Image (cartoon, rainbow, N blue to C red):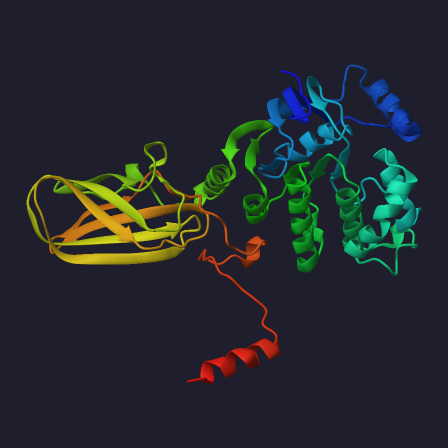
Length: 419
């Protein structure tokens, strides 16, 4: 398959190999040192290790789509964007790009330090293939967005990192590239500017242009991206709907901190929890919550002998093992056979991510079964949280707000006093 107008980015079997301990420019001093060492040990050679930053990566991004790339540091996300930006050549495979590319990969990329902000803006536009008139028509909007009116004629080498990023993003987003590539750079800006950037990227996507975004802020991924791709050790580990991929990634990142699972459980012979599911969910995603409510969750217990005066407990934990909710039912009677415990929630307003249920049974004789339910529950509801992860609470509640002028408030109060 070849890329076309509807598929501006098409990548097939892409690979990038690097060499560790390789020297890009030896210089005279290094060359003389190497000659001296070879004279002492003529058979000794420098050991060069090779590694694949990317291997067998295939993907396509359609026109107007926002793709989020997630993964650990060093997973290969930035390498992929550098190839798409034509900064780096792939070792294997190929990438076909259709359209003008605006890239914002790291602080310092794309601007000449000796030129002013104004000069760099026109230079960037020219590189994108825009005429001087087209750039001039956008110039005031770019400067206002970057909030650099007083410093636009200052050489950018004197800019702070925040000023640099503000101008670089404003230029990349406003000069109308068909494809916008954004790496983890918005963390440098302040919170208000980050909010402006998120809004602008949404505008770019709604205008039918394509965005590829790399960030460790999962809430930005959930808010902006139609689809997410998890890159792990240079390969695609998972690709699909944003909510599912982001939750699976968060779950994997916290795997080392989770409590013991099924193989470690404390269980007796009288009863044992077997499975669980969300009754309101499709059969193909019985463990994925896609609506805030109402929600019906059922847990299956295999009871081997009659039990009286039983206590049944339930708790919901997030990936950090923070308790979200707990409840217990007392003085139950359980007959032998497969028993279903059904919990109905009018709302389950937890933020998107991975969660685990913990179920317990006990009586006067002690513990009967304690089960950390598997698989985990993935919450893939719409996100109503703050765009920055550090300002995310545990609850996910939709709200409406409005601004009421004082005259409107007085008019409303006057009407409420009428008989």
